[in-house]
Length: 452
Image 1: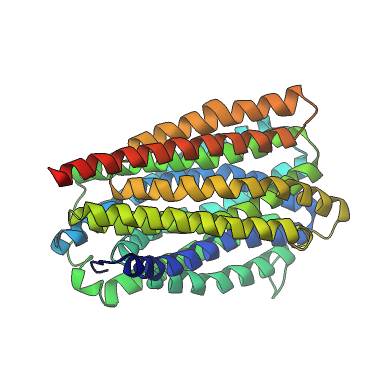
Image 2: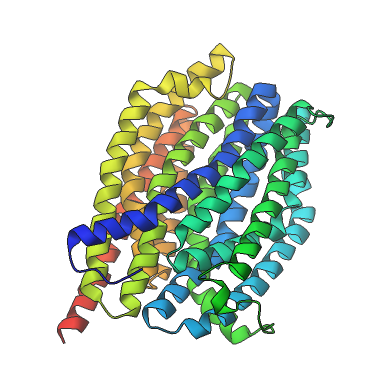
């Protein structure tokens, strides 16, 4: 990264950081996409089982790994302030924390997952697929959390193309393993949806090992000497990371968990409805990678400019990033309008499920505008290290407003499952408005500091 002076230069810098992140996020999302897609090709029961399993896993994954994202603004500020010699210490502390968090997930999950699944109104075969899928995923939790730390380091240094390369290598590994384990190819047992979980778990190990090699051996990471000295756990360093990371993690958790909660509440409807809902949500999540990638880019760029006390440049990056996200959201909305049937056909060969998926995809159109504003805005706020208000806004918008509205509409009107989608859209819109107001407030604050 380097200082920029014109809007054109800033947009070019944004694209340099953004495009590899976008490819990386789409590829990571594709792992879940292929889990869902290939399980659906095996059977609708396996599709529903993987849908339930991923709905339990994804909020935990993104929420806890979101805590580790606190490392990104810390490293960005160090880079902007020319304090690269302190980076290795913070990375090692984050790796220790990632290991502890992963162990907690494994320990707590072993106790709480079985009763949660038993308490849900699911067919026995769907419940079995869900549990086996989660069991397979569990073998890769420790390396996934470790990889998150290494990726934060790589991206915060502006080397987002390295993250892209690592993830692109992992995708064919995951697809091949899915094909082998779901359908029983190459001499492997036919495991159905459970095989998708095992394939993802192995893939997480692969990306962690590859990332370790890059950080240890390749420029510009090698000269940082990340593993040259083993720093013991420092609770003071953890406190700094957690002060930033916990609000980020909970903010992400509240947003993703509300979607998972809706999927779980959908269990009152038919297996076909669950499968179609999850398929439509899965594709909407894939499109969400666009504003999410802009969000991550803004955290890096604004953190860099803020670390160097260039507040005007930081504000300009925020305006450029959010505007670009809105423009792209209009394009994705057009894609959903005119290509809903081909998209639905990616997830199932059964005509009635395809029709249901198309129906739910209509609601995904309205997600795009709100996500295009809310998600990059959160990234900008993280660059300023202003994270607690976003967490509170997520709690209010998604859980206090969005989910109750959806529950009421789904259960006390004739809307049925559509009510949950309307509730989600309501929460996302309110969250976008409140987050944008917070960003404008922070920018005014730093503008006054600069003028003084």
